[in-house]
Image 1: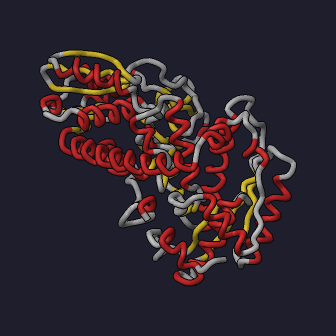
Image 2: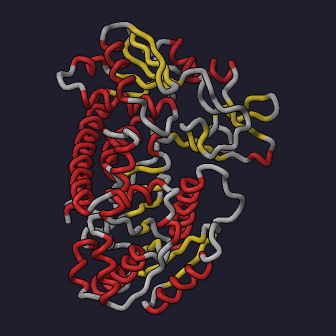
Image 3: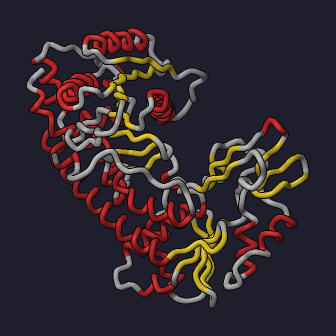
Length: 444
């Protein structure tokens, strides 16, 4: 390989001090093979005690995958790196296969990280991947937040960081480094299959387009981060949760001269209160903001009732499309991560009137009883047959953890500030420190 110093800047910002292990996602393609070789050299020089584990995911979709995993294993052994192959088993979906494969890959890489005792996985996304992603989103009309593209790090399910130290490097540069070193890689035939949107976009992008799009993504990420920080400050200063499931906002938020951060904060809170993976449409949020700013009003958006009255401004989950009792989703209604001993014949559902009534007895006097009742009635409760045992988390053998719905599965690093503000508001698990510090990797 070329001197490691050529690529040190890609890894210098990673927070490796104090970590015992790092997992590398390695498929055998040029990008991930370069990541494995470059990072192993960097680690040997700067963090010699750091344990590296290369992980290859066999999606079970191509017969060549097992041989490709063996190829990676042999290359890892040559570098003195541990290697594991994890297989995505079970039936595959008839539609949305690529998205399902991505989710399975992330789940298996996170599993490998847990088993290795680390919270950090390195992924080999490049500047080319960034440009392709931005171009695809632009073609679909996904501007705004989507223009920021791929984040330099993403928190998976609140526990595992996927960092992308090569996000600012062109694929051609990595391949040239591998060629100079006489190192082989595997070309996945699916990368030439024009049935896939990314392949078509890759063919359409020019060299100049890749550079221009990459710079635009950096600018958009900076804007998204700055707006998120403003929204986080508003949430911290203007929002409270007087009872579980009910968010109260200071109506003064409508009087702010600059509306962008206030509308963004409202979109985030709507998604959180409604258990939605995506923020509500910006145009609809702007219309809702204008309606609520005009005085007393009541409307629904993203599964949430927003009500402004003489007692204040409140958000709570609407009484529609709640999970059926016994729903086995790991996150109930997109809002609460629940564990319970279902082997004991229990199930999760909405509370009964008696449970709601007992909760109302302890509700603060300055919260309208009607709104507190509506919020309590949408909380998760534990049932055994036709008996409500109480709220999840208060019944022995159960736990109940609020989650920030839009970022419960994936939290991009440019959204950390608002995610932290909402986590503090609803009592969710604190967001861990990002695996880097200082300037952005994309600026390196």
